[in-house]
Length: 113
Length: 114
Image (tube, rainbow over all chains, first blue to last red; front, side, top):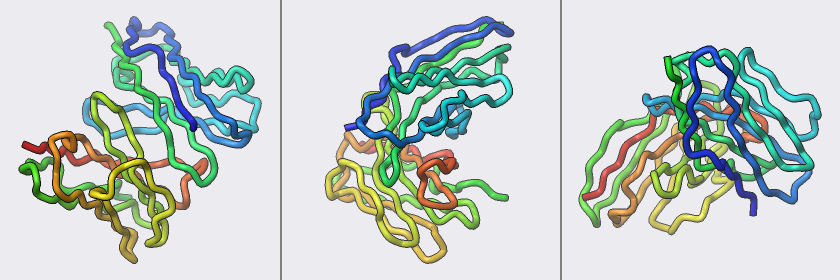
């Protein structure tokens, strides 16, 4: 069974600094997709970034980028130039074709002014 | 374009009762998924519907059921409520069966069972 592990329950970063959130997953599939979602206090989950496993190039979305290490089954999220609005719960998620999305336990990110 | 709408936002029910939650997806989206979020278990997949057919189902008891209508709106029902069913229930819609598709989430329904 596919599992997603986020080993950092909480992280803190100073405004304008860079922070990296960790995620590892376990799968025997070769074709799958990885996502990072953000859940602010408003509760609405918002997609931050996604990666297709067959693509070796790491995805980037403005200040957000990933470090995808397929062999190590690692998918970390780097947030550069952190802003107060980045404070939220961040969930790493995995999905293979025709299967449900599996989420990690989440990392609560605090941004200090 | 309106986002995913879940109703009601908050609900309090008594143990043993049943409850129906509603989800209206983004216009044109045909896939609707439901998730249960609790502090202890995190986000757990309930089921996914596409074109009125259940395509995937999570590991939940038969008390949890759902359906999707021809306009893609979806409902989930929980019968014989237990205290442990207290959770945030999230609905997500996608234009097609999810795969690489982005899932757009609603704000959820907070269910409290007393």
